[in-house]
Image 1 (spheres, rainbow, N blue to C red):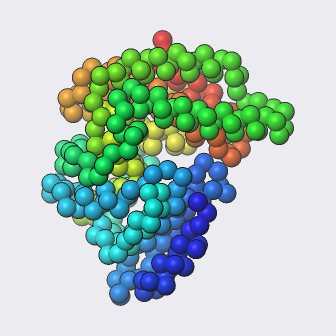
Image 2 (cartoon, rainbow, N blue to C red):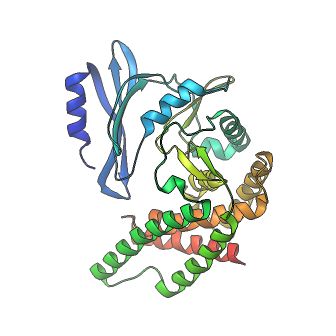
Length: 328
């Protein structure tokens, strides 16, 4: 990580780019760990986007993007055309692609008022996305669904555990009760394991999130960012939808009761979505999805980050309440 500027310089030696301007930078939990960047630029007289990824994790976005362009069956969904690209390693790649025409970005404010359209397009994506993997699977992708979740949660728990104790040693203060959190986590792991045992793994984009969908004309939409495409447990994306649209939003400023009510509203819509996708036992499945996402948010999005302690404490209060509600 943190090699983005050097990678950009290397690319510019090989590819004639003009008017290169940074428009986004991604971080690996801490703001001093830069894992990717997106640039607006000109290529052969055309507007273009250059995306560079240098991550800790396996990132095979290029393969997934090309596969979607070749096999997409939707008449509504498109993806940007690729001009030039290179997979430098399993964790590092760059893609120079078409700049999508201006349109309605499905950001959080728009989704809050137009949730039905967003969920309708999720179904469109799910019904048109390639069903089979486009590459050899990793070891983790060969795991049963319940073990896949256990592995990921253990990794996030280690990240959160390490940073939380580092913060404690630094200032002598704690924003969590470790003993209480450990009991809740242990109970949650058992339930997640039960719910996902026997469920299939599904080839998925993995990040059908706000800002990754743009409506450019009536009936025409563009999917962006294929970096997390891999095998996931059935239902994983339902939890990821709620995580990206609600758990990672600014709703932690709402009163707790109102925040939990918002969770219930999303939960109902996502249960309906699971029924439309013919996922067995949709209500129980969503319970498992929400538990998994809640703990991901507790460990990776809160404890492992450099967010202000006061904000982290508020997030932990709300997320812990959600976990306790789901465990009843």
